[in-house]
Image 1: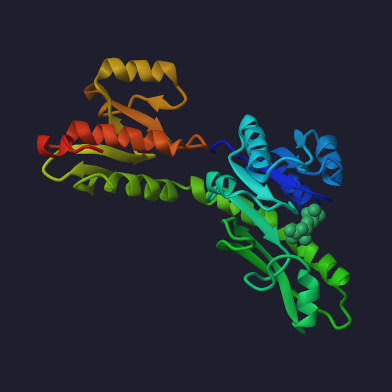
Image 2: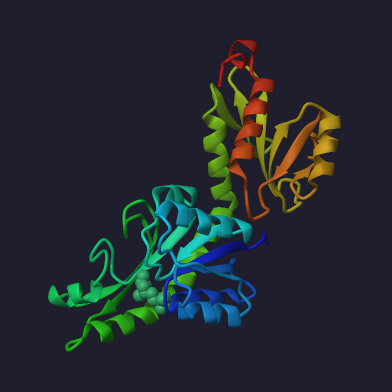
Length: 313
Ligand code: GRF
């Protein structure tokens, strides 16, 4: 099993969704763990709970600090804790575009309505005023627009006759606590599925000039038209349980050096090893995609016919 995703939760208050995420993560087979709870409100009750449960916390009042600078502080804390994914749980601060961009695709939020209905505040009042008979909650990826972004999961909750905003909110909260851990786990699991990793490798590889794909001994291989293969995606290829990318290093010396410098990341591939190829693991839980892109480009250059390899990119 790959390493668990490392989740940082941002809260401003009660933190009951954070607690739901945390207790769900205590199951051995949960795909994520909570490594940091951070807040823009040092008095947030949720912080006490996180501390009592032995989870690292960070709190700083945002007053007097401009938005971008405050988000930089939070980002630095998330980095320090090795966070891979961010879950907003009642975080009552708009986020700066730069922060949102840094966590794109890896930051989720929960909202107590069936989005795109009833964005923003005073959700339950709006639902009751509109006479709706069904409301619910939504977990969605965070984008630059408030309560926007693709929905990853929703739960419908019936509106009862005589409901007040509080009674409706309380029932929806129960649904939130069930939905959030499930959707977060699905998100981090889907990302580490070999199919998702291959799709991303493929996008990077085929973006290189005249790159094409074909199966080579059962493994997806990427080659330059009129040139040679520059990458192979290996998924349990030799029944070794390893998901990795094989690219061309400069030779066996560099290969040995790489493996020595980072034995958890690099490995000597079974058949291509003697020709100086290097294996880069893609199943460590966190993938540095810029690094992967760099290797693919380098390997492409080494394999492309001369007329292409001089292209400036
Ligand atoms: C929840 O209703 C959530 O949907 C909304 O804010 C509330 C936070 O509650 N975004 P809690 O702090 O998780 O208890």
